[in-house]
Image 1 (cartoon, rainbow, N blue to C red):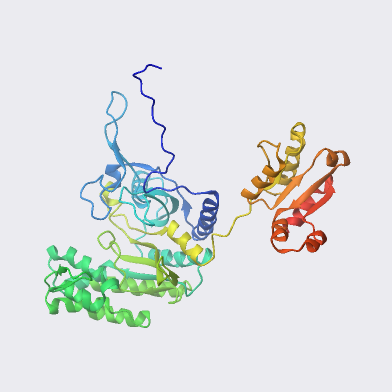
Image 2 (image 1 turned 180 degrees about the vertical axis):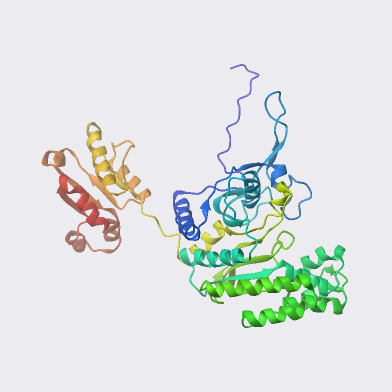
Length: 493
């Protein structure tokens, strides 16, 4: 090597900031949960769809919140324009599963049934500042109906979401699907005589209702308020009279759906669009009742104001109502794990024609965290049976043992490391979480027997039992080679 040629530094073995790796147990838990959700979706007639992880920036559009440029908030790059090759267009990793669906539905609209029901599961990417529990890559699980204008599609999505939560183990009483309608809010803004240039600010303040309450929102809509640090926050500048129907809307949640709907009708005044929204909510409530979804599972709730700049009609959110302890030992409600609504303008970007659509997106990592908090996931997974190697020259026979176990549906593997130290093989089996180790040395082979070692029982005896108990209940059993599968089945129980 030339003296002036510097040795290249070794790359750091570390995950990029904002990303994380999923170990075997994590992947297994996630896949198990997603499979249960997928079975519910398919019961409702939805078909799976996998779209490309990469879309054109133009197709993705500007739908991330607080984004000024089409490629801000996403991982985007420009293809090199070369003769006969790249076009020079901007490409990006998908930031959700809905924008790719809109492109797909427009591209294949002549081939797809109408309505088109699909579900999709997979990773999405956000080029945002990472933080605790906030990653740049995460999983979503979506279900959407494209081409159905009836709010029956919205009701079905809400019912299906409730069924999916219960399918993965969330019990009734531990969740609620809350439903609102953008049209109702439009009617309230109309009744409040909010100018178009004030509407966005008003929506922003309404979204703080859960945090600051009625009086806090009133102050933010009118003259302003001080936050917890003492800083002054400017108000929107509405009068008390203008703010009144907005507050009536936010506080219209009653003991049952019928009373809530009556309160909403009063809040919208004479607004036509508002009345249309209330009627749609009434239809959804009636259909949910027909579907057997009681108000303890899904309820009309005007405090749901998520994504109101994006959705065009009903909006919904699934909230987990049980409490967990935060990092400081304080009790808090787990919160939202899914959200969605009607977005009738998304496919129109491609076709120029209105195409109704509605759907739901489940935050996979967040729902899995909730299951772990409830003790419904996160249990130690059982590893494979490990066939140990006592004689390198008999590797084919050890492989045959593993093959017999697999044929019987028992997860198994042969130790492929250096077999010289048998203790290292048992340490390997322990790291793998193996329930059983199979042992056959030259003496056992001559007698056509095997040793079946119950590693779970052995660990418990070593930790708890006296010497006499250990002698009376050995964790290792010798059986004939022909009885290998039967004995392993017995041990696995």
